[in-house]
Length: 355
Image (cartoon, rainbow, N blue to C red; front, side):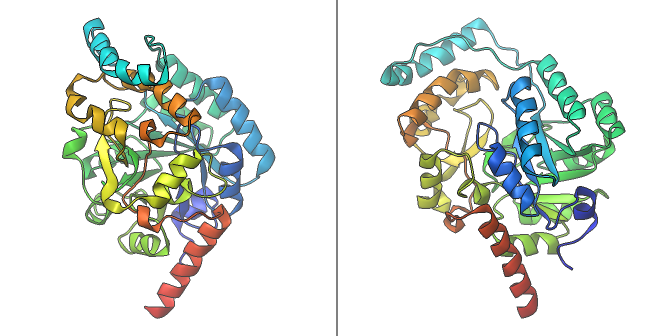
């Protein structure tokens, strides 16, 4: 059958569908386990989680499913930033803090030891799959994970990044097109130089690597899945389509914004985290658009803006939230995870018969 291949066999999936590991609270235990129980791959977005939180969620998911699931980690970055630079970024955000009555404080952020601790937890808890974004872990980390039979998946936004993932020993690689919502996974060149559309990127990567390719970016339904398979990918990774499902842990205002948006309303911005990411244009993005050169580097900016975004969410104010979304927003639906996956599979079956 079309939905079985080398990658689905490796991952133990019914269908070549992976739920994107969206960090920041979207990937709740109920959400991830429901995806896995439906025959796709549920993924925890652990980029901003503390180690204890990660261990607890892994155990919760294990109590809810016996199917394969995974964890995604961000490769830690240690930006060189001056006190003057942080103060400038702080001052830039102060008017927004004043709007919400928030006190500005210098941030703390994840370091390499926290990353290593999360890797250790993934090994100890016998998580089947571990994926990475914003770069590639050390050879020692990859070797240790594979020693414990954990499947490792990398992220690439260009052909060269995909080749590096293969050379470093990744079992598969997510190829992220420019249409994708959320943060760009670029780690070689500047993100603006690595904005290749998925239809152009996938076949070029497939021609250069032998590991399975996972297509990501703008895939919302069965049409996107079958197109990706024809281009040579072995699966798709979908974020925006899953984000508006009933089980998703995304804020209701975030879901509503996606359901009401059009394809020309998503933009790349660095104002929320210091790293380019695609989301629905709102007041936060508009107010800081012309001051992006003054914001702090990732991940400092993420922690500087976090209190503002959290308070905006508490007040149900989407104008100051990070409304991550891909360009396929018009195809978004409010439905259950099972309805989404079953609809995708049925559509592919229909298209193959018609073709």
